Length: 197
Image (tube, rainbow, N blue to C red; front, side, top):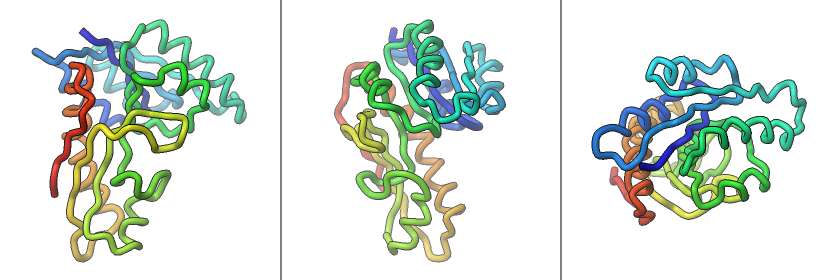
């Protein structure tokens, strides 16, 4: 059984989707939910689900990312995870952190990568006049929102869409895609999965 640690920064809706999927014959179980914000409401949801939690507030580190990550890594490694899932974790990770967990760290991003790495993905898709948008799960590398593709889900861009309505539709697909990819990945299948629009 694979052990999964999940990193969040806010409400943790993708974390909840992952946790809820890891039951029955699933080849993995959650062992830790950690956040860079002690006030993240996702921590309460993890506690309610009986999962160990940890919080390392990034603010006191005043931009010293390596020191922040050292504190975070102590909590992660104490949980001995086989897989690390970034689920709305809004901190850019240093190459040192990525190297430590390379090959076993996943991320979900709200665009059809390689389009629109970084922030404001839905507005960028609308501004470009794209006919579809979506989300991507990938292995994490030292390059932001890069790395081997593990899955994508596509949704149509509708007439009258705003970044908020598009984001809500993409988020529903995130909650389907990430658990599907994790199940395959934990079982040793790293081939990508695709959900159509």
